[in-house]
Image (tube, rainbow, N blue to C red; front, side):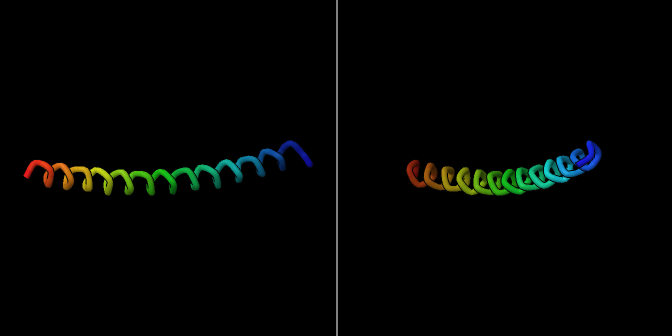
Length: 48
């Protein structure tokens, strides 16, 4: 395999992994928002 082909393969893999990380980050952000909302609701109930 030439250096150019190896670089192309690694670049494609990096792009794939970057997309996976971005997707996971979106999921984590959504979960954090949900957890913060639940925390606020629980605190409001505790303070009521």
